[in-house]
Length: 175
Image 1 (cartoon, rainbow, N blue to C red):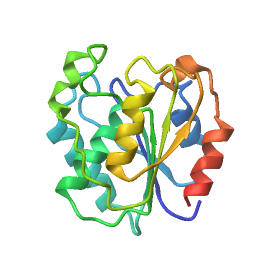
Image 2: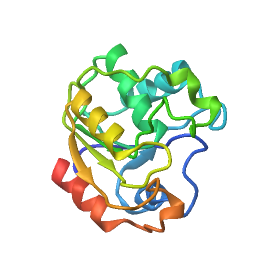
Image 3: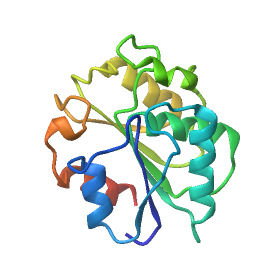
């Protein structure tokens, strides 16, 4: 990877068996965006933390998000205009879903504007936090290429993806 790589986890962060944690260890220069409170997210704080992390990059970074991290990027994109090389948006949640924890409600409504950078949205057919149809809508709204991950749950630790080579191949494709 030649561009800086920012790992943008979602609600509750990504634990040691999550593919994002594997990538952070495996990919040179990968840095995790840190949040003050992973369990009580607020859109203002999370967007500010993302912007601060992007500002430290010497060149436009690639954003690798999971779940609420993708929503954070969508909110960041309507507030800021820093250069981004691209974004891999994995399993962004449907913020209108009743399955979503109430702690995430500060992120509603989800922005529907096109992202001003290239992006790939990876969606599962059986994600408990977003129907595939809703993921298709987010991809259209954001101008993202949609990739069907099949029945892989929320594409998290419980999905058992390990280092997730297929996801890494999509990241290389984005680059």
